[in-house]
Image (spheres, rainbow, N blue to C red):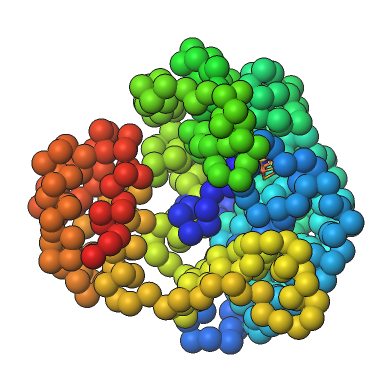
Length: 414
Ligand code: SF4
């Protein structure tokens, strides 16, 4: 699946009624009396599982493909990293992403879930998301995930079109997506679908068909991403050799507009640049990122925000495994942002959300007045019709949504 950058990428689930009832029956009980090692430790955690059967041509995520022989060493390493965290740390949101977590065999997946559950017990009303590939989710894996408290499965559907899936080098077809959604529904409360648009040769009509096929499956949540050609990927090389051509910019914009129109007409709330949710079904974990909140993260390439410090683990899976096996730290980068940089970062995260941010809230949370910090670029973007400012709240306009990534650098740099 196409994994979002954890630092940029969350749903409000009530956890009431059915959900709470079901998790009272989990193998590992939901902890109801939090005890933690810090005064205010993060209440969210991300776990990165870096394995896939095959590396899709467009993917530059931290993973190894076809190296299942490394899975036992990875589980040892992850357990060592988890043990170093102290705790246990009660969490409201837990996200296991990858890679493809469901690529693990049933027994490896169970070992992973046990280790994570021991360190990150789930609070009542929690959200627990797991990324899955339509080709490898099985009834046994859904049951196992449910028994450990999973409430949400994010399926890397990407498309329902056979030729587009082939080009993306995905190993599933439309029928498998439908079967996977059905399987997930048999045990898990929420299902999210990831979709990719602007794939070479894709027409606007073909993209509309994908959107409608997704809507017909009635998911709780949809994430849509325009294909990017990332340096280091097979697609990057193929584009250099003129084997692949990016779709025209106007077509990509029209596709994004179609996603907004089709999904909102179908009752989804467009709550973040790339994310759409049925009422009450946003991804709460990602909302922690966008709110500038703190979270634990473990696994190769995992990025965490704990105690005011941002850290990223080594991205190379082999390096991560080697370091953990020899008792070294997995951390590759570590920084404590100064208050101005932190305030700017919070602004950018907040502006990705449809609700934007209120001046008063920004000042309360950061200690800076928005206009004093970034008045110049803000005024310019409002004048250009890319941001809307009613004097209290600032948010992206529809035009701004289409070019949002181009606005952030001016807001992040002094
Ligand atoms: S399934 Fe493909 S796109 Fe998803 S993480 Fe694995 S290699 Fe990347």
